[in-house]
Image 1 (cartoon, rainbow, N blue to C red):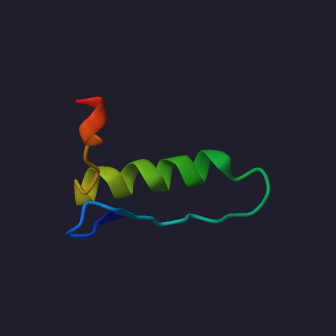
Image 2 (cartoon, rainbow, N blue to C red):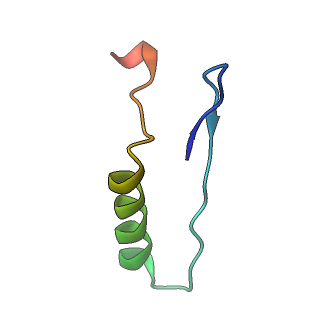
Image 3 (cartoon, rainbow, N blue to C red):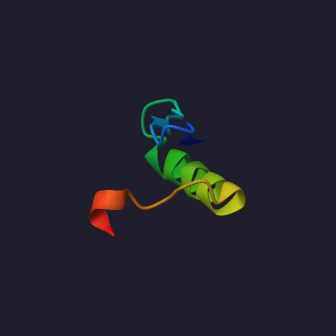
Amino acid sequence: MGYKKSGEPISLTFIGLPMAERKLLTMGYAFEQLTKARKMPEKYQ
């Protein structure tokens, strides 16, 4: 969902009914695109 000032990630969980994986992935992707909060971890850059 974002990061604390210390750099620690703050998570967000999407929960759905069984067999709702496609909908959950679509919602998660839309959230990432709208918020632009995701950053590459420093050690992977």
